[in-house]
Amino acid sequence: MRMKRRTKILIVAVLVAVILVGAWYAYFVLPGERWRLPWNKIAIIEVEGEITEDEGGGANPETIRQLLIRAEEDGEIKAVVLRINSGGGTAGASWDIYRAVKRVEKPVVASIGDNGASGAYLVAVAADGIVATPMSMVGSIGAALEFPFDIPVNESKEAEELSSLTTGEFKDVFTDYRLNESERQYLGERLANVLEVFLQCITEKRNISEENLTSIAKGGWYTGEEGLRMGLVDKLGNLDDAIEEAAQRANISLEDTQVVILRIEDSKVIEETYTVN
Image (cartoon, rainbow, N blue to C red):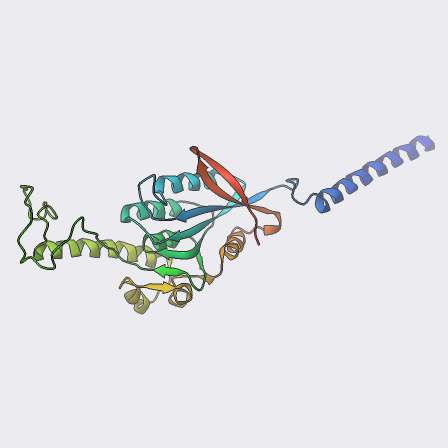
């Protein structure tokens, strides 16, 4: 009986030793293997180039929306970093991405590279935090209207072409290749309304003084360092700093977190591993 008992104890001891050796090997020898659970991820989504509804352009709202949905539905992804390098684009496309970012219930941090201005800054505002380099370009808050042809500086010049008959005073704006004063005022009011919406989005998410709000409403751009002082930016840093900020907001450690870049190729969302420096 004693021999059998000793044999059982020896077998149990050997099993425990094997388990401990296996755990040591997995922790120290195989640090890159996915053996630890739960496995956390931070997803980088790039917003680069002109923001436009054109699928062949830079940052397309539908593409960004699909990537955000993937990040939202993937249980391993705990936070999102928007890597922004854009001077903006059309108002409608910028607004679509802004709304898509706001709907994400996981922590989202915007990382501004060289440029995060105009509509691209509107996208950044939707995030929970904004990180920019000291030399990043931020701001350029406002609205602009590009005419499809050369517009005389005043209405004294005769129209080059008359091409329509309309029922309303402003229905044929642009069709006669000139703008009278009432049309100029009308378009200015439309642009002012767009600016008002832009500023409302900023004040909803950012703690900016009335003085700074008046200043940024003039449409100028600022460096990231200036933006930090004005309340346009939360922290100065690069992409890796933004990843660290996202990890903190998600209450996870980068030691057991994989950082991936989400992209769409051949109509499918793919993941590329990003190495944090």
